Image (cartoon, helix red, strand yellow):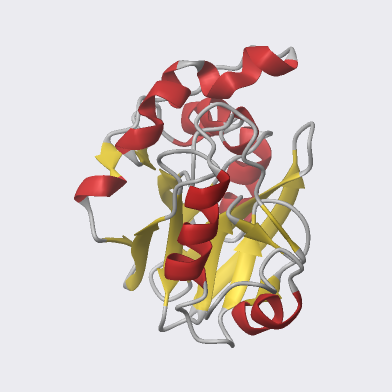
Length: 214
């Protein structure tokens, strides 16, 4: 069984997800936005062992807690990121553009463009490359669990911004068409900001998608 624990952290209210295979106790943290020690305590309280950090993309508000989390759990904790976002990671997630200077934590060692799937315990997640918000943005999708962690690609009633360096509106819309709307309608979408939604709900009512052909 997959356990999902959601936190809203950091200066812009980013959703972070602690996920675990309850059978094995193995866990991963998706987008540790801030307060890494808090995430480590939450895992320890549930007897979960954090094995990896998965980043949907490398903006500072999605990795600001990585360094602290790794320091508490294991300094060499594996971090997974698409290589298309390595330049952004190296620029500290663009934090200095917003008046921050963060430590991005351990250098990513799992390149998601070279992997087709990542696992937490025995539960596999397909990696769907979805550029547009950033060049290396990915979505973590489990058809078995009917859930997708979609970062800043799509939100309840909205879509990710494309006005930051590396963004592209046309790419983002194409990513939504090919990587989000191809999932079954009952797939839960757990985004980087705001409440969860479903593929079907966004297909029907998202104002940014009403003119798309799908």
